Image (cartoon, rainbow, N blue to C red; front, top):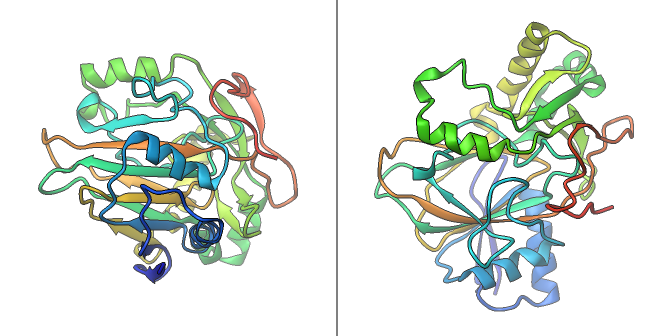
Length: 297
């Protein structure tokens, strides 16, 4: 029997009684999908999956993307991206996955393979709750703003974190440049709920200076990362975590030194974001990333 247990006040649920290594029945798949939309992050413990089973499970949420627009996939698995801390890819900044393309993923599934004995947790935030927390005047402002998202990072603010390994990884990550304008407030098409749609790939607010943009984005981001809106997941081998990429941000905590940490990621294709006024995101630079994701209407 499938059991859904809330694990956070505003975000997160653990689902038990499901073996993800086996094909899911239609009713179970719908129950899991609805739990994802409601709780934003769902956690499965003690799963024994290989990449094929992982891909099959992720496919219950919809069509899949390939591994990444620019980073190579796991050999022989075009949908699977390896997330390994030793490769310069530690995502220790709040972000939503792949928002620099015009149709970011609907959902991300992440499966743990190697977990350090301490550290390496992942933080998640409910961006719908963050939007609800905004004072009315700030909410009205956010409803009208658009932001540019890019896959080109700026490490100048934190040069102590810039290593040769990270520089090489970034060359691959930004081999094809993408810049897209998204509404700062997007509406989740499954729930109809508005969410703050910003994070680490956001570079500036359309029509404002870098200084003005930085101040407004920092202010909005403080609501995203309020402790009340967050969940901290402590990984165990065999965990599978799924998050609604349209209504969350996440942060991989870099506190495990040189210890190994390896996970495999499969993402579900999403639609083009729609703002509070019904307008859709648009490309500034790059293409529709058709090699990476189908656009789900």
